[in-house]
Length: 414
Image 1 (cartoon, rainbow, N blue to C red):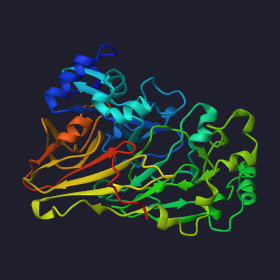
Image 2: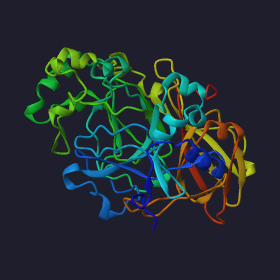
Image 3: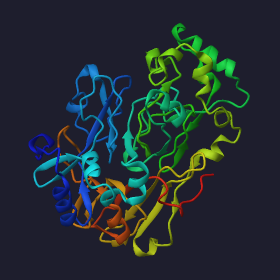
């Protein structure tokens, strides 16, 4: 078994190594699995991680319930390892972070538009997988995150059917606030933090989660994700503010309410509530504006493959990320052209992508290397990537997510 720890770590002078990797693969970078634990949640055990490795970071760090894709964003966990949340590229017996590769090669990997504007890969995606619900919380906007030296965090959801054979304990998500809710009611919930259940869910509404669909979630929008495995393209930030004090009988520390709030505002309830996007939270047509159904791209089913938009739409007038799902029938080969660089994960089947093998594993050890994750450069995406399903019986299904502003042809949400 090939493992991440068996490879030589390279931290500098990467250009020639990266260029060799891209030349050999056809413009692609092989990525190793990137596992992230959360101390305040119970893992759902559907990410194919070996049961013996769920607590590989240690019981005190919490169980692994997330896998991050194409990430150059550190995980904002207490006592984290130095590289936690960062994706590693694998080539010729060596490993180096995707962040370091992009810092060295810039536009050669992510394209001139994104490199010139952001100087980094500003988005990432992940699977999160929990046994029960996550506390009702929101992610700060760029304006408020800047006050603590961070970036805002809009995000999106898609529920892959291949990973959701069971829904676990609570396949529903509370989102937003009931129309007519007042700020005083929310402030009272926050004031009641140490009294037990602070009642914030009494002010919200739950939606049943359906595999094969998704949601678009802007910053400042309260949401309590349910227990389906979720594919989550998002902005490259890990800021949040928990608004719920008790979940399934488990305490949520108040420190998670104020984690990304200026210290002098930790008990300023007016300020904390002001971080909410109030209009979006109490929108009476909330589902119409945030719910996503897949949209087929072209009429290609008769050719044996279907490419579909699964994440699309604008947040505050900007397309910050988008995502597609490509399905190939057994034996089918096709070339797909895209507008920009992307991160890819295989959720079903086996095949090839240019010169790299694709294979969805059944079980993964914590440090094991896999053939299911790839980062595609912009130039390769423009030229066209050749996908081939080498199975005789099973569909090949891959998810790929894109950076800001690269897919103006994507549908509008709602």
